[in-house]
Image (tube, rainbow, N blue to C red; front, side, top):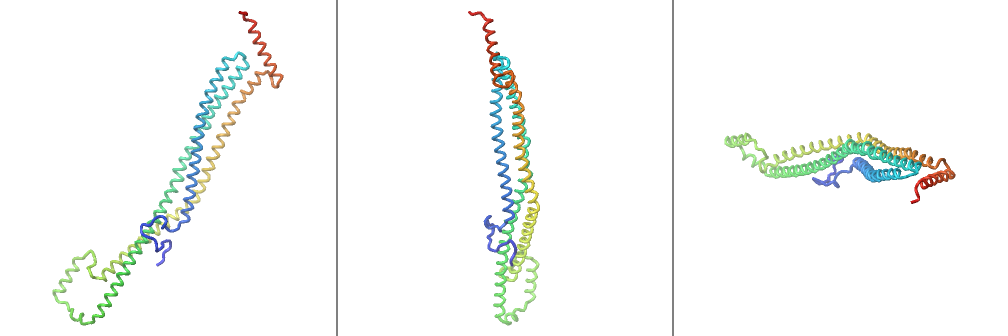
Amino acid sequence: MVREGTPRNMKRRGSESQLPPDPMGAALTARVAQQESNARVLEEEQAAQLALSARLRAAGVAASAKLRDAAAAEPHAPLADAFVALSDALAGIEEAREQLLRRRAQEKVLLPLRVMREQLIAPMRKLLGDRKARLKAMVAADADFSAAAAAGQQLQQQQQLQQQQQGAGGGAAAAAAVPTTKDRRRKNSLFEKKPSSAPAGDPAAAARAGATKASEKFRRLLDEQEAARNVGALLRAKAPAFEAARVAATRALLAEAVRARMAFHCRALELLTPAAAALERSSGCAGGAANEQGEAEAVAALEMQLASLSEW
């Protein structure tokens, strides 16, 4: 008997290399592995970004404090205002870094990654594991049925051989075997005991028991084949939705990583604009002549201060 998906040469309790070919399972396993790799790459990138942001935030906060100290010590007011403006800009940038690159990354990248692992990858991985388990059970059932069928065939051959030998003995032995009343009682008592196994030396009973066992093994094989087909049909039905969700989720996470960086740099540019304006004001107006005018005013203020002081 030839059955689809159950090669006859497979050993019982076979290893994975002895399973029947499963192209669909292999293709979906590759997709799941790719998505796990995507998730791992995004998690590692976000972890590196969070660590870098923590270091930059500490450095930015320290620089902002030093700039404010410098502003407090600077005697030239427009220059002191420029120090203050830059200090405020750095403080705002680090706050934006905390909001846009750290907290937002945890809420909109790391948390969705965990949800994707739990709700998308894990169910498909479990279904693939069920598929492999069903294929293994099918291979084991095929091996059991093959062994039972071979044993039953051997018992049938032994029964036929014994029948041929008994037939060669002729009718003399049959005529001499007229049962007496005592023999009939003994035979009835044997039937009433209902032995659990075939009597020793009874090939016919052994052949019937072997046929029953082979029939049970064959029913189990059919059940395992049906279970494997059901899991395969479920995999095939869920594969399109899994692929669509996989691509959409990855695209959304990548887009969020890009948007977060764009938002941060736009906010940094916005915060640095007042600092640039303060530098322009410290020079009076735009242009090299204005820079010279501002420097001249600073020199004049210094001369007035020195003149107000006593020489000694």
